[in-house]
Image (cartoon, rainbow, N blue to C red; front, side, top):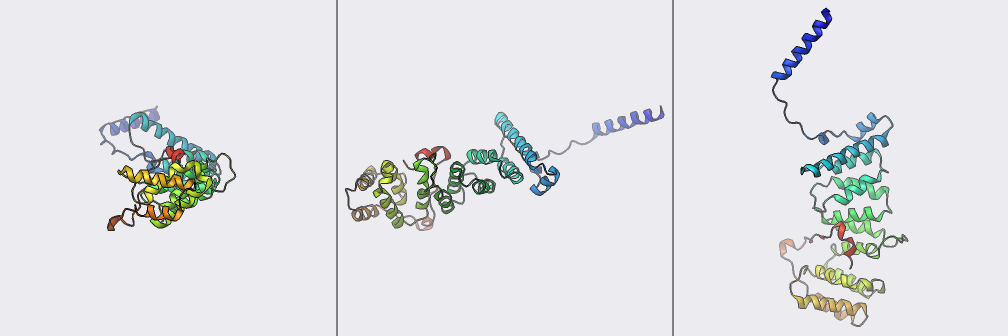
Length: 275
């Protein structure tokens, strides 16, 4: 009986303490407490795959809640990184992080995830496209790495890869070249029968190389289009075409001469990249 009284008294004291206590400060989002991978592996005690799935499910639930309640959720790439560190063969985080991350997202945590994706699945062209577009449009505008990633697929025997994806690496290469080199590459490609069906896509590429993206002068746009079409038909002298196109080059301001315009193509636009 005496023990029961002590227990009841203790419960009453605890209840009163909670009642009169100051409100707790607002805690940060639970994702801020994501453990480091080495700690998570220790806690998983060999069940890394299971732990990876549980972390990922938790992240997806939180992402879904953010859509339902209109709140922000900037932790998916962090969760994806932890999940794929625990299980690098877990393909779902790579696909989700790659497909829903905005190409101009300033947080580049997803780079870690996607570099792991293209290393673990080097022949998955969809993962490679996600990452290449992200690299090209991110704050770093890393066209060189984007081109290197996609060049791997230019000679692939995988019949599921669309032709414009096999040649997309050249789009990224254009942004790393001086105008003269870019024009030479475009003219050589226009002469190549392999790209004859894609010749319409050469006009915006050429205008971009000439620093005339969004050119309002329809006469220039039409002449560039005409020259590229005639090149594909081998009906114009390539040297004349080069000199004529070069005459349309628009000089950039001195303070931005070294800055390249980001490629605004998104993952949903990959079907029109080279068309």
